[in-house]
Length: 217
Image 1 (cartoon, helix red, strand yellow):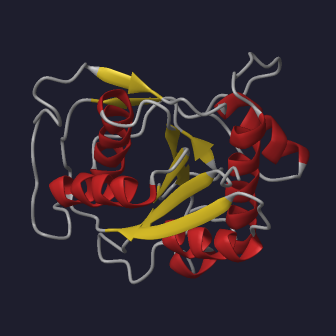
Image 2 (spheres, rainbow, N blue to C red):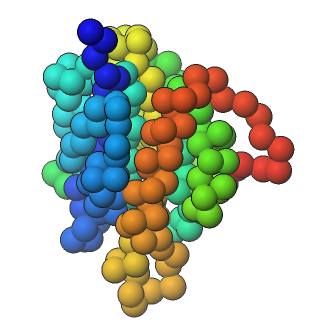
């Protein structure tokens, strides 16, 4: 009997003085919305440079996922933004949750300068937009722990899990995080629906296609 495909979806712990992280809240909600038949496994990743990648590696060895979707918070963005590329550098404007603040430090000394996602990000964006969910492709995952995890994920796929596909998605603040600021936000329910759409698109589509009309952020 063929076992169902396994999807690993991760979110981050709160950081930078926040008490919640919409990435983890939305991942948890996405799990409750998921109706298979694929198996969806979720996990919370520490917002710590080296530990984030180590945690992900252990999860991938444990669950042997066919698809990995890592999710993180990008405060200031107004859309769900699947990331195109991860770069091989840590350059932290603020410390991580363990006080680490690397500057211009390679993530993998022998790794390539960058890794591209293997998710069909443009078609995922089109699918979200068709549902009325604000979405765009992003060409920069930054240089904080989100990019570190994204690069670590794609390096793991390149070196240890060649049959897996994966990528990273940034999500906006949730409304409760911006009650006293003009920052944009999206409801957790809408973000979760977007994550489910990304996962379903990635299952159904192996190759991305160019889209007319601009999918870029």
